[in-house]
Structure formats: C-alpha cells, structure tokens
Image (cartoon, rainbow, N blue to C red; front, side):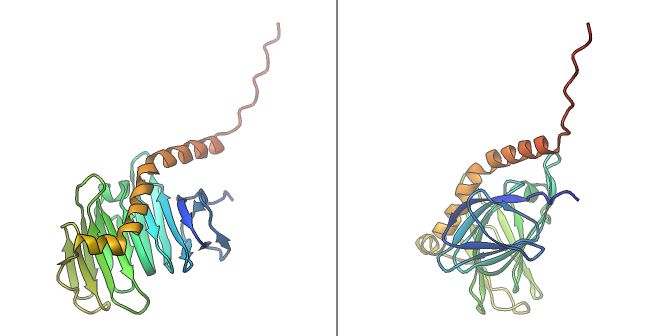
Length: 231
C-alpha cells in the first residue's frame, strides 16, 4: 500500500511539539516535518507551532494546545476540498486558504462548545481547559475582513467586523452577542499567535508548490533508458 500523503507541513516551531499519528505513533515535530490527516498536534507549556496546509491555509497553535486534524482533502487542480480541524484546548489562530474560498461550508473548525464556519478570513480561538471559549475575527494581512459564523445548539452568531468576538460557555448555552475587543488588548492576547499564522501564509503558496512538484516526481514512473538504435 502506498504511504499516506502529507496534507501539510510544519512552518515554524518553538519548544516541544508532538504529533500522534492516526496509527498511534508519537513523533516530536521539527520544522519542515509533514502533517497527516488524523494527526493530533500537542504543544508543551513552552511550545508553539505554525503549520501550512495543502490548500494554503495556515494554523498556529500556542502553548498547552491540543488540536486534531480531523479531515483534510484537497484537489489542487480544482482548488476544492474539505478541511475540518478540532481544537480540544489552547489558543489557535488560522488564515483560511483555497478550500474556504470555493465553498463556505467546506472549512470547519470545531470546539467542544461551538463550531466555526470560516469564510476567507483570519481568526483566533481561545479555549482554556474547562472554561468558556472565546472566538475572535482578525483583519487579514491585506486589510480585508472575512466572516466567521459561530454555531452551537442554541443558534448562530456571525462575526464580520475586525476585532469582534463572542464567548460561548457551553454547547447548549446561548452564544454571547458579538463584542469588540480593544486592539491593544487583542494584540496583547493574540498578537503572537495570529502573526505566526499570517507569516506562514506568506510562504504557503511557495511551500505547497514545492511539495506538489516533489510528489509528482515521486509518483512519476521511472522511464527505462532508451537503447541506442543499432546502426
């Protein structure tokens, strides 16, 4: 059977970050390492990681984080696919890629308290263990602003203004009304994790191009050397 294809790679890393593969194998991650569907990414108290996925979306996880890459399917030629990531705890920032552009329901970020639909945007989710989750919308690096819909069993709230956030206390509790986070406070809380995701995004297209070229070369059958025609 062919080895599973990676769906992304580690862009930047600090401290200790582990991935548990779908088969249960644990690996310590290093810069440039592949990420696979089903990976559980865990950052230590001193750890943080920035990741680039195949559709040019990027994710950044701060210390004491746990994130599951549930699903990542991407067809580069059609620029379509689906991406589902589950934040179990910690602070996660993301910049959406091609998948979110083609279908507003194709990129989903799950938490135990609410689910996020992501439309062309930069966002951040803070989920301390056992506490309410905070979800906030950041302006994109180019100044544009996307949209995040936050849904749980009580309904949906939509974030569409920069530095807007909501808080969710439980899966059944009403989602708070959107509130504005002062920019200085946002930057203090989330500046590092957001800029790590945005920095990865500046490299994403180039990195993915290189990976695809490499994969094509590996998949190409080796051609038999042509024999010189007999004179």
